[in-house]
Amino acid sequence: MNIREVQNEIIRLKKENDICILAHSYQSHDIIEIADFTGDSYALSKLAAKVPNKTVIMCGVRFMAETVKMLSPEKKVILSCPQAGCPMAEQMDKELIEGIKPQFEGYTVVAYINTTAELKTVCDVCVTSSSAVKIVKAIDNNNILFIPDCNLGAYVAKQVPEKNIRFLQGGCPVHAAVTKKHVETAKALHPDAEFLVHPECRPEVTAAADYIGSTSGIMDYAKSSDKKEFIIGTENSISAHLQYECPDKKFYPLSKELICPNMKATTLVDVLDCVKGQGGEEIEMSAEMIASARKCIDKMIELGG
Ligand code: 13P
Ligand code: SF4
Image 1 (spheres, rainbow, N blue to C red):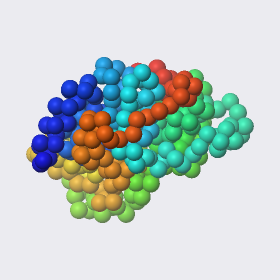
Image 2 (spheres, rainbow, N blue to C red):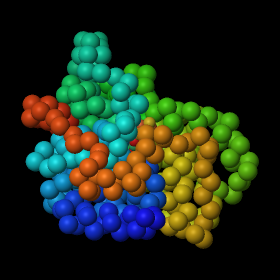
Image 3 (cartoon, rainbow, N blue to C red):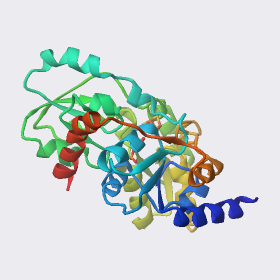
């Protein structure tokens, strides 16, 4: 089968088997084309609670599939590629946060959604890159412990200077690998380009940006801008998707190393196997774990609107 035939077979089988396919924006173009819904982590979380189908296939990484399961526990939720984890989500565990809490008495623990379900059980509220500023502002406490991404935390702290925001050292290894040198090189090569960047990048990188936002925020900004050239400071699939959608504009990846191997682990054939009922991994979580971990996701949706 060629790519189009595989895609057509996926579309036929997902309808026949009442399956919804969710794909994060970092997935490759061939997967985005067959997804029912695509978007950033916040949009996918909100959708997860609403899709009517009895099975959901999550093309993304493990914490995203766990989020879908927590919000729709009655559904069968399948992670399309069982190896696709998020290294940031594995950086901190429940024991670490429980151990550190006595030093942060009276603080609200804010967890980036890129965390395990188990860690979420000891946090107060989740955020995503697109909702973090709004949610931290809305929290009824001036003392915030923000985990695990200290780059996103530093970005939020800049936008919400009235609050006391403390961090633990963690973050996305893909975005954190980008340096000021990459920015200087890209800007020298493309002096007329606007620079759009994800807040998982280091402060020295975001400081040089014309726009800072989530994957969807970056895409929306670039599509509606009058400018014709853009340097894209996030996973390189976003430059590729934008180039497809806006052929009259030019998109330059900030660095050729901005590739997340976990987000790229899912293939179209993995998705085909999933819709056939032969592949992926069904997410299993106990009712207690779901009840305990989803409280901070519900809080995110309540405060994030
Ligand atoms: P967003 O889609 O929320 O921007 O998140 C980016 C990311 O790194 C997801 O793992
Ligand atoms: Fe995790 Fe970073 Fe990959 Fe997102 S881009 S899944 S935060 S490693």
